[in-house]
Image (cartoon, rainbow over all chains, first blue to last red):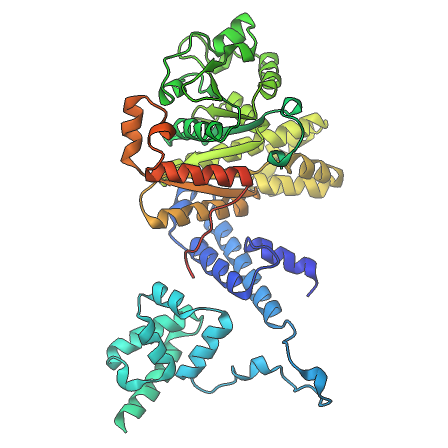
Length: 182
Length: 316
């Protein structure tokens, strides 16, 4: 994507072009929350700005995030391919891990790391202990709470990773129950 | 950045910081007095100008009685602005006061206003801090528009946000109108604005976009004229941590909806030390420097001087 276009998207997310993927994500979450909802700032200006306008801004924010995320992820990976004559793999290595069939703990971890989200930030946001999140990712099933509690926790975690909470919880809980029964 | 100039002080025009924001009671006067004290204590020459013409009370915040001479004398008797400045308890800081009874904003003529603005920058000071009254009166807007720093002070309340928004919008509208007039586009712009429904224009931003599209030459002019239109935001009387995030939200909304650049320069927590100090009629920054509010003002002053912003660490 040309640099100029990217600049536009950075502007929408109120970032400088030197921002990292993590900055992009932070700005996106903040703006998405702001323009999705019930902030008193929007309440104060509700008369001035109809729903349509708000939704338009929201779409711009979503779009900017998607474009920047794609652009920043595709930055040439620092590989040692110079040293080998082998043809490059069909897909860059970074995309391999998202080819998965179910949402296991390691997959969730991979996705989280890809988004540049730190465990302690996640812990604060979700009000869940870091230890618990680690155990979910490591699939230490014995250390995890009962299925009823775990389901809610996995769902909220999935929401933060922009995944379908029901799908993720169903996958994860299935593995959880299978392992527990053994 | 004007602060970084190394030219001799005598040759330098004062930098005007105007404090507005629409709603009364958000702490404009208090913050003006504190920042003035703060800058003066750092060795800058400061003049405070109380332009709250209907309800001037800045003197109370810095521990002096109402000055004998006021802006009334400037407007009615032609006394020069620099002769109105009185010394304050704070070294390096002088005050020019408005007046309660004798004049109202309505009777100030255009030529007088221009004369006032000319003399304002020539005051022998490095920082000229102008405390504007509440509301969006044209004189208030015009003073706001000539400032090097256009600062709005607000509190985390819905009405304050609403008023501030309208204040900024009115200021922007005024600026656009003045620019259009200057380049002979007043009539045509007025015509388009009046018929905005048929042009599919719903707000100021769309209006400007329409003008820019229809008259490319005008686009360049407007961009240039509006390049200096930057809002600095100060959030006062913050009581909860989430309120700080509100500063960032207001900034985002102003930028997205009005297309105006905004800098969120600081927040000040609600502090009981403030009303104590106001009751004592002493300069806050001389007596309550170590209070939470005093420290926040110091940070704010640094941010304003260096053009820095509050870092938002909320969310992720």
